[in-house]
Length: 246
Image 1 (cartoon, rainbow, N blue to C red):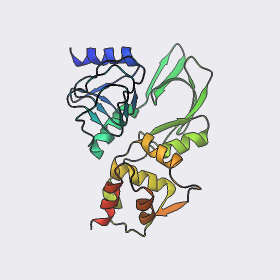
Image 2 (spheres, helix red, strand yellow; image 1 turned 180 degrees about the vertical axis):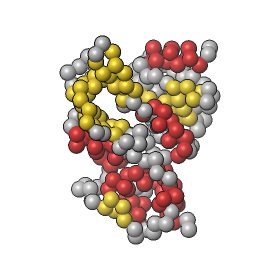
Image 3 (cartoon, rainbow, N blue to C red; image 1 turned 30 degrees about the horizontal axis):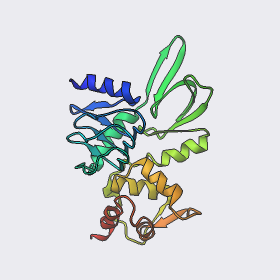
C-alpha cells in the first residue's frame, strides 16, 4: 500500500495525522493509541516523543520503528522488541519544525488557524499573541510564538508563555561547550539546555519538572546542580558527559 494511503488509513483509525518525510511516516509529538483498536503500525514509523500502545491489538512492532522517548506495551502481548531510540538532535528538530508549523486560512469571512494539533477560529491577533477558539467549542485559548517557529498555547497568556519554555530547544548545543560545572543557568535556560543537549521531548521534560524536580523551583541552577537533580532521568548521562568530558 502506498504511503499516502497508509497515512490516511492511520488517521481514520486513530485520529492522528502522520507526515511523510524521506518517504517514511513521521509524527513529531507523542502518540497515545491506547484503546484505539489499531492492530498494526506502518513500517519505518518515527515518533518524536512517546508511543503508548497499551491495551491495543498490536502483536508485533513494525520494521524500522524509532521512538524518541518512552514506549508503553502493557496489555499488548509484546514481550520483546528491537526499537531504535537514538534520534539525533537534528532529526528531532526537523520533525518538530515540520509538525509545529501553524497553518492559516480564510473561509467565508472567518480566519482559521491550526496549531498544536488543534483546529481553531482566529479571533484576535497582536504581535506574537493569538486569541483563538477551538472549533466546535466555546473554549478560548491563547497561542504565543517566539517568532522562530515555536508555538505554544494555554488557557491564559501566562500559561501559554510557560508552555513555550518547553518548546524552545533549537539552540546549537555547542553554545554550552564553554560552560563549567559552576556556571549558572536560569530556570528557563536550564530546561532549554537539557532538551537541546539530550534531545528530550517536551512532554517528558514537563513531567520531570512538574512531578520530580524539588519545589520551590529556583530562579537559577548551576550545571553541577542540574546534573545531580536529573540523575537517572532520560539521557541524564548524556547531559553529564557533555560537561564532564573535557
